[in-house]
Image 1 (cartoon, rainbow, N blue to C red):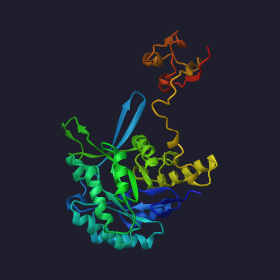
Image 2: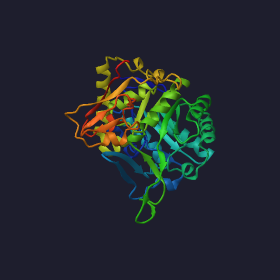
Image 3: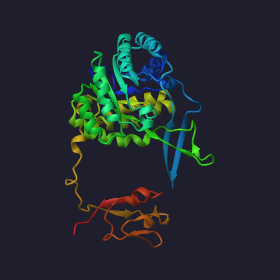
Image 4: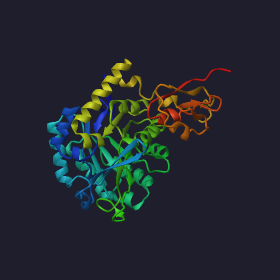
Length: 383
């Protein structure tokens, strides 16, 4: 029911383990297979040797509050695989012996020679596919502000000329136009696209007046990033003919469903596994199965891209006021927040909230901020 085909690889479900410390060794990949992963991208092999060692500490959960609401950022400076190319190849060979799921290699290089040599190395070791990590959030290109766009296409052509296995390019969202880059990469021979790498971020220690943790920029991701990913998957998927793996912010089976509805073929999961362990992966896979069953779908192809075809253009959006805010008086505490934030000044306290239906335009803000759940939207009476 949940089977998909990604770059010619048959996967039992769309949930792939993304490259991280959780996919560093064959044994770790085998445990993720047991937890439900349909494939795994091995932790990235870097040419730059200094990037094979990670500082301590290198992980931080940044929690930000705005009133009663909280967002979480997983801020990390995890470096590349500690292995050199020979040891990395041996680990791929071992993973292929231990696991029945596809093993996808990931490489990030600085020189043309290494891009070609490393790609050939992992292919010879038995990798089922290859992911090019040209946009690591704390790699040298991201930290220097270099031009990703031309580099991605140039590197892809080099690698495609050297290997026969499928090659995907992992894009950064920090591009002028992800859509135009995706189209160019398809023309250059990409077999798949991974949207997106983590953003490059920065946090400041106010006591030390310097960057937190290791003292520099770091990867900046977490659940908040899902909606950025969905926006671009939805726009890119109808305009390219190669599969997309969505990654960033995926924490539930419902998130997987959203990515596929937008046109993704598969997803890659990292943060949820890093923070909650393998059980998070199992929960995501099972949650996706339940969602499909609840909707009555028997294959992923039945709904892939369904939402992408339903995104309205600027001129198609209906701007007629159709709803109005209504207050359930018995639940209203009279806190006054709805009156304070109402853009139209349509709410008064008497002493509980009362809505002036002539002034209310149904924006829905009061519904979202009410701490008691006392406000809801109802159809606007016809005149």
